[in-house]
Length: 195
Image (cartoon, rainbow, N blue to C red):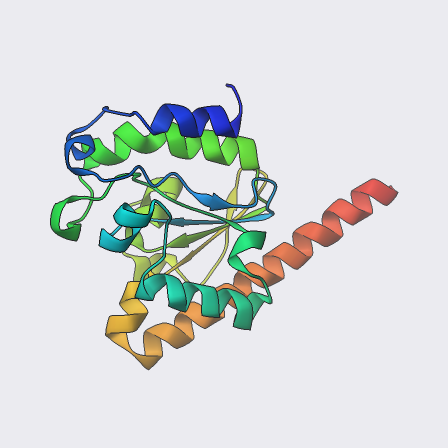
């Protein structure tokens, strides 16, 4: 499978789908490759395509604030990526074939990082990783068993920027849910180590 760096190098020259023709940069992911918490969004936007880093615009500012206020963590302490690594034209939703083309990179990141908690940001990330078609409003609000840990779906930060206080309050609750799951995972690992 190679290393995470090798996977990123491979992704940097990817031409598996038509998105490659319109990108400025492949937005692979950033953060701690040994993080217990991995955040997965849907696709890079304009700012992310230019900078090569996920969640750097207004949505990223809100994400950073929620990470700090609800989990006491900074972006450098988690790993942040997306389902799709290249910006869809006009920030449209990723197409199924684009999601499938990028799937090996997402799977590779999950295998290398092995997060205890995955916090999905938005409908596409939750639906892709849970293999479900339910709307995000129905998926969020609980945890799901996921690869030896848990997955916590929440809204995309852009939805909170558009949708106001109710969406933001629900996102905060989901971030607290992720914090609780992290604490439970850490306690369980500590008990195993002592056992």
